[in-house]
Image (cartoon, rainbow, N blue to C red; front, side):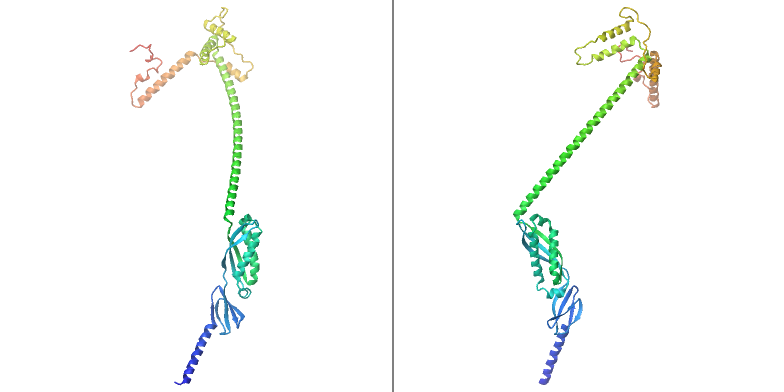
Length: 380
C-alpha cells in the first residue's frame, strides 16, 4: 500500500473516533430525583428532567447535576451570648430542598456556606434577645423565627428551608450546676408546700371526723337514755302489773325486803351504813308481815292491798285490774309434769338409738326420786 492509502486509513479512523465520541456526548441519561443544567456554547440552554436526552455534540455541555431531594445539613456548635451574658453552644440542623435548579446554579455560588452563615447570624440575634431560661424553654419559638428568616433569604436562590431544629443548647458547667441546684430547691419548695397542704387537709378531715363522731356519740347516748327510760317505765308497769296480779299482802312485801338486804351489803366498799328513817317503818312492816301483829299489838287486817289505778290509761288499768298470779300448787304440779315428760322423751330417744336406757343416768332429774348427791340421802 502506498502512503496515500495509509493516510486515508488514519483519517477514517480519526473520523470514526470522532463519530463515537460525538454519539457518546449527544446521549445523556438523567436519574430520578436529579436534574441537569445544560449550557450551549457557555450559555444556559435548558434543564433536563429524569429520562434519556440527546444533545448537540461539541455545542451542548453539562454545567451541573442537582439533587432535587430534601437534604439534611448539620452545622457545628456555635457560641451564642444570651441577654443575661451567658455563653451557650447551640447545635443546629437544617432541612432544605432545591425547588429551582436554575436559580440554585446561577443565583448563588456556594448555597450551603451562605445558609450556614445566615443561620449563625440569625441565631445570635434571636438568642441575644432572650435570657438563659427563655432560651432553654423556647426552642419552638427559636425554630420558627430562624426558619422564617432562612426561608425568606433562600427563596430567591431556588432553595426552600422546610425545617430548622436545635439539637442541643449547652450552657457552661458552672451555670448548669447552679441551675440544677435552683431546680432542686424549687422541687423541695413545692414538696414542702404539698406536704403542708396534705397536713392541713388531714387535720381538717380529722377535725370533721371527730366532730361527726362526737355528734353521733351524743345522739347515740340520747337515744340510749330514751330507750333506757322507756325500758324502765315498761319494767315499772310490768312490776306494778305483777304485784297487782299477785294481790300482794304485807308478808310478800316483807319477803322482798329481806331479799334486797343482802344485795345492799354485798359491796366490798360498804363500810358504813346510813339508816334512813323510812327503813324503820319498813322493818316494822316486815315484822308485821311475818308475825301478823302490828307495832301497837293489834292484828293485821287480812284485807288485801288495793292498787290505786287512777290516772292510768283505760286499757292499762283494765289489764292491771284483770291480772292475777297463778296458784303455787298448780305451778309446782306443772313443773313436775314438765320434768316427767322430759325424762320420758330422753328414755324414748335412747330406745330408738339402739342403746338400753340406764336409769342411773337420770338420777337426780326426777323430783320424786331422792338425790344421791344429797348428804342426807341414805345409802342403798
